[in-house]
Structures are given as structure tokens and as C-alpha cells.
Amino acid sequence: MTDTLAPQGRGTDLATVLAGAAAVVAVGVVRALVLAGSVPSGIDGGNWLAYGDYVRPGSTYPPLVPLLFARLVALAGPTDASMLAACIAACAPALAILGVGAWAGRRVSAIAAALVVATSGAVGEAAAWGGYPQLTAITAAVVALVALARYADVGSRRALAVYAVAIVAVVATSHLVAVPASAAAALVAGGAIVARRPGALRRALVAGVIGFAPLLGLARTYAALFATLGVGATTRGSPDVAGILGPAWAADVALLGAIPAGALFFAHRGRALVPASSTRDRALLVAAGCAAVAWGAAFLASGEGRLLYDFVTIAPLCALALVPVAVTRAPRAIRASAGLALAAGCAYLAAAGLAAFPAQVAFYRILTPGDFSAMEWLAAQPYGANQLVVADTKGSPIGWWAEGITGREALYASDLQWLRFPSERSRALIANALLYRSGFPDAASATAASEAGVRYVLLPAASAFGLGSSAPPGWRVAYAAGDALVLSPAGSSAAASSALPSAASVPP
Image (cartoon, rainbow, N blue to C red):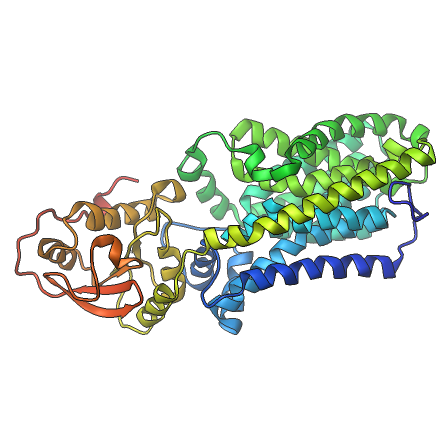
């Protein structure tokens, strides 16, 4: 059948799937045109570049995206690499939805769901700030959970192999996704045992070993990350659910609430709703139901707003899974009317999401051409770790990009809510002390900086400190580009008004 809402045949129509993939790629091209510019886009891209380019003392992160992004920067440069990475990450969850939907025989519905994900405002925002790991990991998580549900149900070795690759990718990419994904995988395996599927216990043990292996391999990384729970970004106020999820927030929440009940009912009464041979339908429904429970519980337990960005992928997965349950016995007229209503809703969401993207990119593009030029100049200078101080831009740590581009650890000012590791928070406190509590940019602050071993100070917006292109007392201008200024202490003749703390003396 070709009716969007009707259960479709099991064979995969390659032409239809390729058309859906082409539509998702076209959305990626539209995003690329918005992301294109003379400087790198986003804030977090500098962080991934720094993590992938050199070892930061006292901080760690799942390695896959930083390593890949650093290699992409080496090939294409920071500006094009950030554009390409953002586009790929934004399209990846949609392609996962398209793939699992087409595999389950729901080709046309899968295209609609994929386009909703690809054009989502939440996905666009994550891509705009540089949330490549989270978008990549939720892509792998969708594939892993559907493959595991298939393996737990019928024992497919191919499904087991897909699950193994995908779950390793999740754990090696984002701890934020790995935790609920692991919980969802446990629910999938446990549900098969409860439903008394033949061989379910043995399959659960195999899946558990495979899922635990990458966690064991990255034990040091995850231990360091879990030690930062409750620090920085996780301490902000209640997240804005509607603001993050966009116009479809109510539908997303409703789907995440409805799918667990549907999954439980289907697990016991599925034969009354769809043919008994529809094991792919069952795998899709169980995976979606367990994902909804795991992510919903994780969000309610932690209040972590970043988990909401995964909802815009899980909710369409839930919608795909509910199709056979909701419409198998519905009259054709109702299916047609519902299809038209959904098509109109999808078109509205796509238009709203893409319309919001230019503003999102502009908001998170904190680098200016002057900043970027100054960082490239600094990259060619001979100085050591923690000898560069970087001012913030409206509280955001632009120093992440300075570290990534220069390949050296820096002292960067920042609102501490964005920083989680003790080492980066202590370095930020030192930079904050120099720039905002030492009388900077007077001669005494130059002496304090010199005595603390600071060689350069990068000001992305020199005018914010009342400076033009001329050097203030005690300082010399090492480099200037636009409103960006690189200062260097000229000497230490004046008495320091307040000595800068050392990294060891600053509490985390």
C-alpha cells in the first residue's frame, strides 16, 4: 500500500527510500547555506577540536566526535569543518528514523517522520551551537534499540551485529545519550524475558555483555564525567520545554507518554492488532516504548534540559511505531483525513523549524572575523600552556575556540555555568580575576599578569573594556584585527593591585 497511515508491505521500495534520503540531504544543504560564513559556527566546536587535538589535563570526553572533528578540521579548516559537521549531525537522526521506518515497511510515513526530525527547530539549535556528539549519539541509539528489540524477539544475528556497532558508537560519542540509551536497552532485554520470548534470557545476557564492554573500555572517561554531576550546566533553573521543543512540544510529550502504554498492550495483544508475522512492527514499537520510558524518566529525575533535544527524534519514532496499532482497523476515510492532517502539520513544523534556523546560527556564532584572525595569529606564536588569557563573549567561553585553534590550553573567562570539570573552572576563575577584578587594563593588572606567567591576553571585543587600537598603560598591542585585540604585558614596574591566584589555589 502507499497510503501514508496504512501498514505498508514488508518489501523495501529502494526508490522511495532514496527519495526520502535525498529530501533529508536537501534540508542539510539548506542548513549549510545558512551555516556558511567567514568564521566557524557555534560555540562547542572549539571544545571538540581541543579535545581531539591534544590531551587536556583534568578533563575528558567520549572520544569519537572530537577525534573525527579534529581530522575534519585538518582537512577542511575550522570554518568549513564546523559547517559540514553541523549539517551531518543535523541530518543523521532523520536518516536513522528513515532507515528503521523503511525497514519496518512504513516507507512513506518514515519519510514524513524523517523530514520532521531533519527540519526540527531543536535539532537546528543543537547543530547551531555545535552539539554534534548528542545528535550523532541519538542517531546511533535509535538504530541500537530497534536492532536489540529485533534480536531479543527473534534472535537475528544480523540484528545483534548492528546493535553491537551502534551501542559502541553511542557510548563512544555522548555520555548524555549513553545513560538513557543503556537504560532503554535494559528495558528492551528485560521486556523480552517478561514476555517469555524463547531464548530471551540468553540473548539478554549477550546484549548486556556487549553493552557493558564499551562502558568498561571508557571507564575512566565516564568516571570523570559522572564526578561532575550537579556541576555547571546541570544547576540551572527549570528548562523551557516549549521553548526547546518548539511548536510540536505538546505532541512530542503526548507521544512519549502514550507509547509506553501502547508498547505494553501490544506486547501481550499484538496478534489481535496486526498479523502475527509482523515482528518488525513489534521491534519498532518495543524500541520506541522503552526509549520513551528511559528518556522521560531520565529527564524527570535529573531536570537536565539537554535531554529534551532527544525528544524530537524519539517522538517521531513513537509515531511510526503507533501507526499499525492506531489505524489497522480504521475506515479508509479516517485514514485519509488523518493523513492530510498529518501532512499539513508536518509542513508547518518544517517551515517553522527552518525559519528559526538563521536566528539560531546567528545567536551561537560567537566568533567574529577579528577573533578568528587573532586566534590564527596566536597559533603561530611560541608560548606555552596557560600563558594565554581569553575574555568571554557575553559570558560564553570563546576560549574553547582559542584552545582548539592554537592547540594549547588557555585561561579563558566564562560564566561558570557552562563549565563542569574542576580544571576548566579553576582556569576560568583565574581569567575572570584578571579581567574583572584586577583593575584591568591598568598597569597594575599588567604586572599581575606578568607575574602569573601570562604572555598574551585576547580581547574579542576590546571596546567592551574601553579600549581602541592603542595600548593601555603597562601593556603593548601584539596584534589587532577589527574589534579584537591581543595584548601582552609590557613590564612589571608598577605594584600589583591584586595578585592573581594560581591554578592550585583556586577551589573547583
